[in-house]
Amino acid sequence: MQPLLQLQGIEKSFPGVKALKNASLAVYPGRVMALVGENGAGKSTMMKVLTGIYSRDAGSLRWLGEETTFSGPKASQEAGIGIIHQELNLIPQLTVAENIFLGREFVNRFGRIDWKRMYAEADALLKRLNLRFNSHKLVGDLSIGDQQMVEIAKVLSFKSQVIIMDEPTDALTDTETLSLFRVINELKAQGCGIVYISHRMKEIFEICDDVTVFRDGQFIAERPVKDLSEESLIEMMVGRKLEDQYPRLDQTPGDVRLKVENLSGPGVHDVSFTLRKGEILGVSGLMGAGRTELMKLLYGALPRSKGRVWLDGREVTTRAPQDGLASGIVYISEDRKRDGLVLGMSVKENMSLTALRYFSHGGALKHAAEQLAVGDFIRLFNIKTPSMDQAIGLLSGGNQQKVAIARGLMTRPNVLILDEPTRGVDVGAKKEIYQLINQFKAEGLSIILVSSEMPEVLGMSDRILVMHEGRSGGEFTREQATQESLMAAAVGKQHSEDLVV
Ligand SMILES: Nc1ncnc2c1ncn2[C@@H]1O[C@H](COP(=O)(O)OP(=O)(O)OP(=O)(O)O)[C@@H](O)[C@H]1O
Ligand SMILES: [Mg+2]
Image 1 (cartoon, protein in one colour):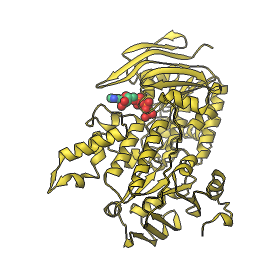
Image 2 (cartoon, protein in one colour):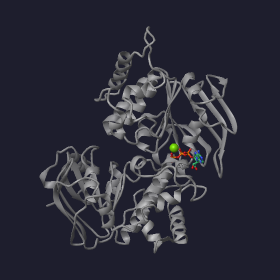
Image 3 (cartoon, helix red, strand yellow):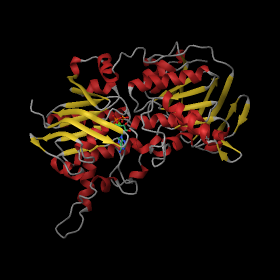
Image 4 (cartoon, protein in one colour):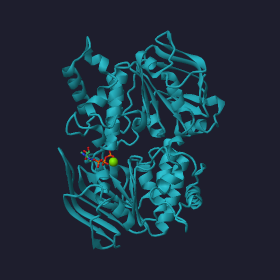
């Protein structure tokens, strides 16, 4: 089959980093090409070279059979290549419709902007994606998931021949993901070619026809998905066999560290649970079930309306995140892009930001200690960066993630809350993160693991709390918990005999 688009032998260097060396990719009409590889393998860079955001150092690009170079994103867009970037690129102060048609506003015959048409067309796009908000809404008022859907609506509005999706489902609910998949199938039927970048194996096997594997900036293989198993694909990605994806650590937990009684607040009603030293409590539930709200209440980012919290037997009131931090409760946000990292600052600064009090002595910063600790975490987490002074915005998405987690651990918390810690992280690095979590568990740290990934919760937790519509939908021991029982509790179909009393 003649590809719509073909990149061959692409090379691209940044100061201190060779991001692409001999990378190739083809996109075929009516097919979805998965692009996979570890964090920092060069996937996003390849897409930026393709769309003309970066110039290539070497290699060729053929578009509809002709050798081409796009001078920039506008040129590639006009040629018929649409891209949904890994980072959101919307303007929060503008409405959904204004964002979608930014720079391409319809003009009526009087030379004025035809707002009516613009909002109507935007609404039609939202409808096609099954979205319930209308296009007059300000983007800044939307959830991250909905913002991601607006990005998707925007790319659809260009009517492109090739559409690139760089980790599009990271912030989406299951229903939103299904809407996206339905649209992908429509696009396929129209003959569009799609590049689908994701770390989610399940999605690759569900929606993709072919897969291209990158490792360390190089092309490794292109295969039809139907010829592969999950194991063989992972092996191609990481270059070795990866056994036992969830290395659970069995140990008897210690004393009760955290006790939560009838905690209530925005989106959360009467939730109670305990957490012991050296224990992992998984928190499961559908998106919007109040998991993140519960965590924010716990460490003080949301106001409590009711309920009590004890830490090591002492009652704590957390009214602000600093209170949580002072009590040793650390929360690592699911939304690291918004309230996590400072993109202009270095890896080192980002990592030690909240832990600075450990590195200061009488007002002076102990630089050597800071450097040592940061260096340790870079090695432990296998963070890909030319140095600790690199601006964090220049790291690949998954590597930024690892810095955010390292930062939480650096404050040496008593209770560590990890909200979707492995979202956007590659399979190999996921396992590294699990092993680290275990190491901290062995040292007696109490961990709350909030995750939408069922196998992750099942594989790592000692106990599991399922949230349903802001309430506890049930609590399960490791032995009781199965995919089915958790799902039933998440949708509120809990049988009373499954409840732990
Ligand atoms: N503008 C830049 N300046 C310096 N280094 C960069 C820049 N963009 C990317 N890199 C580096 O190039 C390498 C490849 O990054 P890229 O973002 O393409 O990875 P990726 O495969 O998309 O990873 P992920 O799965 O984590 O998103 C990384 O080491 C990254 O730090
Ligand atoms: Mg990327």
